[in-house]
Length: 125
Length: 162
Image (tube, rainbow over all chains, first blue to last red; front, side, top):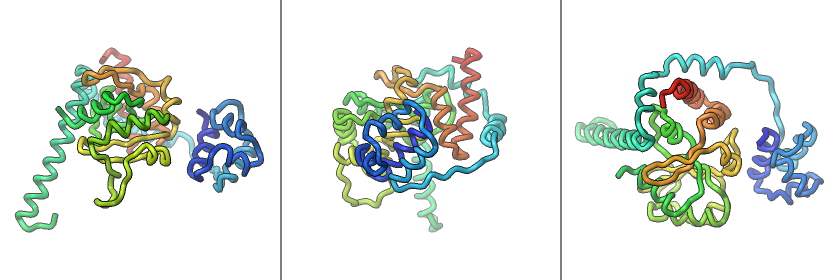
C-alpha cells in the first residue's frame, strides 16, 4: 500500500462514501478509485488532491526536518535494557504472553488496593 | 487461566481471521514492555464479522471509556458500519482495527505475518520488521520508544538470542 492510496481510502471512509460515490463526485469511475486505493499504478499530485477534495478534505503538505524520528529513536535505544530482552527471548511465546498478562492483572489489583486504602484513610482517591 | 488466554482462546475457537498487532505482538516477539490491551487487525468479510461477534459476545464487549448504560448494539451490522473499535470485555481490553496507519488492512498485513502456536492455538502475528514499520508510521513519542526497543530486539534475535 502506498501513501496516496491510503490517503484516498481514508478520506473516502471518513466521509462515509463508497468508491462509486467518490468516483461520481470526482468525475471518474469506480474502477479508477479502486485502482488508486489498491496502490496499483502511480497517482499524480493533482489527482490525489482532487480525490481528497471530492471527499471533503484538503490535502496539506509541509516540510519537516529529516531524521528527527531517527534521532529520537537513537536516544531511546541507549536506555533499552538488553538483559530483559535476552531473558524474554529465552522464554517461549506462551511464557512471554502469560507473564505479561499476569503482570497487568497484578497491576490492576495493586491499583485497587491503593484506592481502597486511600478511601479508608479518608484521603482523596 | 489468564484473561489473555481466555480472550485469544475465544477468538481462536470461533475461527476469527485476524493478525495480532501492537504491544501484544511485540510482547510475543520478546519485548519486555507491558501492554494492557490486545490489538488485532481483522478481516472485514461478512463471515468474519459474524465470527467476531460470536467470539466476543460471551465476554460482554462494550465501548471502552463510554458511560455505563449507553446503548451499544454488539452485532455484525455495528462492525460493518465502523472500522476501528476500542472495546472492554470481561476478559480484558481489545482493539479491533480495520485499518492501521502505515500497514493498511488485514489483507495488506497478511503477507507480513507469521503463524505461531500460542496457548494451544495457531495465532497469526505481525512479523517484527512490519511491527517496527507500523510503529514508525504511527510516529507518536511512545511509538518511537517502542521502535527503539524493537530494533534492539531485532539485533538480539539476529545475534542468536532466539
